[in-house]
Image (cartoon, rainbow, N blue to C red):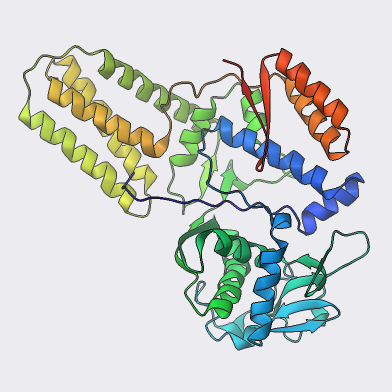
Length: 410
């Protein structure tokens, strides 16, 4: 929107303790589990109107990059080995803790880096490479047979596509420590350069004032809400209505509020589009509209303050509707509002035509899931048969690097 060329990378962690455990519990392959969820994720992002990133690197496809990073750290004496695992030596990196502004000596291990904490020289150290264990996926590499640690994956893939120093790194507040601290340490220890210029951390989503939890019964997926007939763009609006660094309390009343506001915006855009205007103008009104547009941009310049930006949007709605009611809207003022709405759409993506596309019927969604399982099991004949069946029902299936995607025939 501001004129910069943006390259976005969203890494896919398709091997970690949780995915391995799920594959073990389901008595299936790791790839079948991850492909299923990756496909579902991309379907959900499409329904929410989220633009695709430029790259979706998978951890399992970048093992050589991770090996190279470990070799670099090893050559600089930032690592040590214990029982086949390779650990990062935090004591060798004196600026550790600078993201969280914590002193290294005050930090304690969270245990997430490697459960075998007794193998470490220092409890603060974390695993770069985990030794192979029976029943777990493992790779033969120059640093031993095993699999990467979670922290290593993210540094290796981000630097592969964005370089040794890049501009913006995002994540949840729960990633700040130890994950992002560890990313900084291993990356800067290897390159000797700043890793990231700006960090953007999202606060957690709450439901009815409490953190989402299956045990509390307040856990909703996007598909749960869509099954209740909720507009995906209203869900998008609600998620954008709060500043990303502040917790958002999800309620169904809040979602209804978002749907009402979204309808006001749609109605306003339609009214302005249909409004017949004369050639005469109102310089005072034009200046007021330009001031609102400037306020919108200033809010977003201030750490993406979407809540204040939306306030500017509805100020434009009020002023624009009043001008229409009073027949004060000239062609120049109409063009200013349309320019504003175009900019709003570029940033928020809430008004684009066709975004309300009907979701897949349950039977078709089940067929897509069955096809994904068949491919994971190597039953390509069954997978092709399902593809043909879906094609006959007007659904086109695409197998991409980011997973399975579908679209309707036009």
